Length: 489
Image 1 (tube, rainbow, N blue to C red):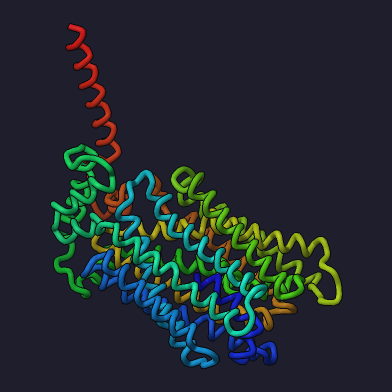
Image 2: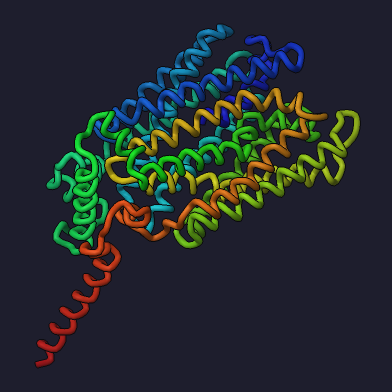
């Protein structure tokens, strides 16, 4: 929720007065950038720290730890009351939890998901993150209208602990990832958990085929690189060509995701809407709330209609083109007809506001959820935790870059910051080219078959999970036909 909370909180009058944001434009921009971006610094560290913890003790214990750290960070922020040092410490600690969650959650979901639904289920991570941001936007709006004094920012800040609390409760009812259990050679429990999440008996051919794929992949990995220490993981990740390609691809995708400019809008939406001509703090926060609704609608549409039907490549390419067009229109509008507080918003200005909403929807139809789906599904089982940690830390590093640079860019890069939108628009075009040449389609493949796609393993002697399911249905039909014939005789 911090993505939605902090951007509105730094515009609330009580917060601005208490923390010294009522100063010249450039000074206020730098201070707000520091307040926002210190959380990303913590998240960068948290994503890296989460990898060894989740790989040693498991995904479930790691998620429990995430909730505790996040709640401690929120308490520090809410209790800061004008002390910038305490606020920074709280945001850094909360960032540790948030960064760790972005590494462990997609990994856990991906490892539990059947391949036919993996895109949709892993994408649910992005959907709930987007719902959290949307709720945060409206919490800020409600706090401005209905709460006075310091409580107007303390209440929104405190609400960040709610998702962590709900996660800790929900994990009590969840099992450990079957693929983590298999990696620990706990095959009995892995079989039981896999059968439970698939709602099939352990003896079912589908379950047995999936377990065989897990075993074949793990044996292939262990044959390539011996040992399981940190140095062994690094050697396997960077010296095996197929693994190196996937690691670099994950880094590149997360760099691209942040350079779309999505978090520039997420963190500074009220400021951007004001720059586009929306007058009044309440109006800009309301427009931000509508922006959140558009993001949720776009992500929900992706999961329901596109996640496992259109494919990863098409989603990334067409959404990249759409976002580039939206950013360029906003840039041209701000360049040639800059908004002014002394005049009403022209028709072209309202189109620019709509372009922001179109950008939000298009991001959620492609680059928002698809990147997390992709980086969680392409690695080998042994390297999945490391690969997602690498991707998540890259995401937070460039999230930090964008969050730190955007307020200053909106003041210094051209009149009214029009160059900011052109920069992000150019990145969107470049991303389309990158996906076209370097990202293969992964829709419909099991996690273990990714090694075959990237040339790291050969599964010709192992029956495909999908084929196993078809054969199981055929055998069941044959049994029914035999039973019918026997009854007739």
